[in-house]
Amino acid sequence: AGRLAGKTALISGGAGGCGLAASELFAREGARVGIVDLPRSKGEELAAAIRAEGGQAIFAPADVSVSSEVKTAVKAVEDAFGPITVLFNHAGILAVGPFLETEEDEWDRLMAVNVRSMFLMTKAVLPGMLAAGGGSIVSTSSISAVAATPMEVLYDTTKGACHMFARAIAVEFRDRGIRSNAVCPGFIATDHGKRELVGLAKYGVDVSDAAIAAQQGRMCAPMEVAQAALFLASDESSFINGTHLFVDNCFTAM
Ligand code: NAD
Image (cartoon, rainbow, N blue to C red):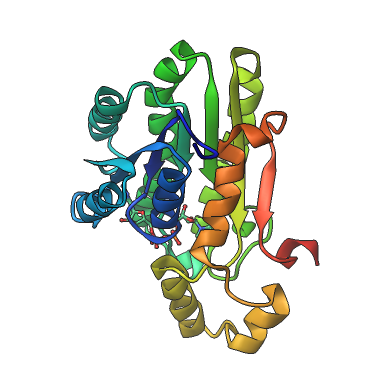
């Protein structure tokens, strides 16, 4: 039973932040969960904890920006649980700083982890998903894809790419049973979110509680992003394709 019963879900960045919340939630909703995250992450412990609670999960370590590691991780999940019918492209990293101080290697690293990863992961998962008759891909965009945050030219650019990636995949694969959508969170209370606020404050951007309250009421909880991803992953959103689901309590509505 559960909203993802019978599905195999791969969650990139699934051992931390919102990815961790999604790994737990998707497993509770009946999915067999492949947690893909860096080798040094808590993926192994998380998978064991999910299994101890009666869920099905394995950890498949990978740096999602590296093709060979992505292929190995996808194969490990398919070998354990069968074809992947839900892909949550969620891993991503942050960069905060003045544009003129952004170095080329930092630019390339963020593009690789946030954008190339979606290309590699989706390309590795799609053959199995197509052979299984279809599936749902959820990619993590951000409010940053449509509203520039000060000091985040590089990060905003990567998220703009994730935003369009979700839509373009939907258009190309609509007739083959694949849905592709994006979740677009506001500021979330995760390690990433906390680092972002510290980074922005360093450059004089007002990220006081009052400023956050004015923009989005409060910080977003990781589980609130996971719940949105669950809806897009599940068959409840069967006619929702190529769209962007904002999880930002009016941030982008104002
Ligand atoms: P987080 O930093 O708390 O967790 C990210 C997870 O991804 C970690 O477990 C980390 O180990 C993993 N990861 C990082 N680089 C990786 C790599 N190269 N290969 C495999 N795994 C890797 O972050 P979070 O807040 O959950 O954010 C994750 C996603 O949400 C990102 O795509 C981010 O852009 C997006 N997002 C975050 C916020 C926010 O305020 N936190 C807002 C909007 C969008």
